[in-house]
Structures are given as structure tokens and as C-alpha cells.
Image (cartoon, rainbow, N blue to C red; front, side, top):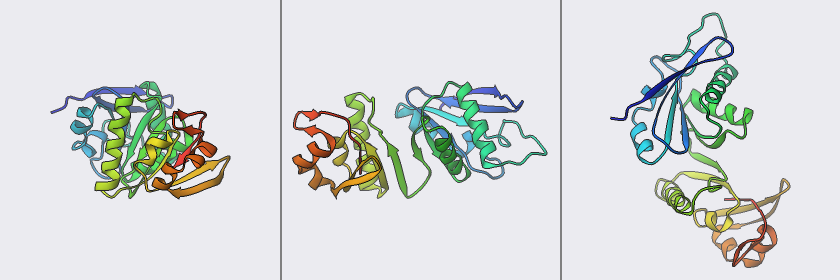
Length: 223
């Protein structure tokens, strides 16, 4: 069984947020839902070992009003309160970038956190039918890129998850998607089946600067 390390952060408003964690690697923040007995560790207990074994740093916060965190009376437990206190706790914990996994209430908090702090969320996983990833391959070592692409293929092809991927590495990402849209300055300039675009050298070079030798300049494609 994975051992969790507990940290309590005192926030500027006087409340305390408790986070438990395990593992090392890219941070994954699991944001629990509401209900009696809800907490980070209890709600995601079946996910911890798998993510640690896969090379992730698992962060399990107890939201304000839940678990071992402060449960102040006489205040409105709004989405913004949950989000602000979570973000402050993550700042104090040194988390500048993370994959956010949210369930139920936690899904709403993850979305609000990504809106309030665009640089924080590397990806959102909201227990949904659709997955959104923004430049998931950026800055990764080649071997990790291939492992991530294999995982994406499995999730999309075998598990039937729909996905929207925004990525500059067009040639890599076209191999795991069905449809590609190229957006420049907010406007769609090209749309085609991914396999068709991957074989269209003229379109790749014109819109994304991709040649047989690789990219000449930056470009972003949605798949």
C-alpha cells in the first residue's frame, strides 16, 4: 500500500488546507467531489497506486469544509471559495503546473482553476466523455512522448474516449486523432481527416511549417 505524506498549509484568510501526496514526477492533482466523508485520499484511493507506479506525483487535497481541512461556519461555500483556497494551497505547496483530475464538484473546481490560472493546468481530466489536452507533448523527452502517445491511442481507440488535442507537434499527434483542424489567429484555415492531412505535404508546410525534415516554425493544430 502506498504511503501518503500529509502537509497542512495555513492560508492568508486563516483557514487550513491539508494535502496528502505520494510519488515523484509530473504532478497530478486529484480534486474530490462533495458528500459525507469526502476527501482527497478517500475519494481517489483506488487511483493512487496506479498513478504512482506510472511515474506521477499524486497530490490529494482536502477541500475547505472537507476531510482534515478547515470547516468554517457562517460562510458561503462557493465555487470561487473552493477554487481560491485550493490554488493558494497549491502555491504554498510549490505546484506551478499540474494535471487536474476532478470528479463531480471537483470537476467544476478544476475548470474554474484552469480559467483563473491558465498556466497551472497542463491537462484537465473531469470524469467526462471528452478529454481536453493542451500541448501534452511540450517539453517531454522523446521516450516519454512515445509512451504518452501510446496511452492516448489506448484511451481513444480501445476505451472509446473522445478527445480534443491542441498540439504543435503535428506529425506526432495526427497519428492518434481522426480529424484535424488548423487554427490561425482564431480562424479555421484548414480541416481534414488526420490521415489525409498527414499525407498532405503542401498543407503541412503551408500552415504548420512542417517539412520532411521536421518543423520550420511553430504551429498549432487541433485534433
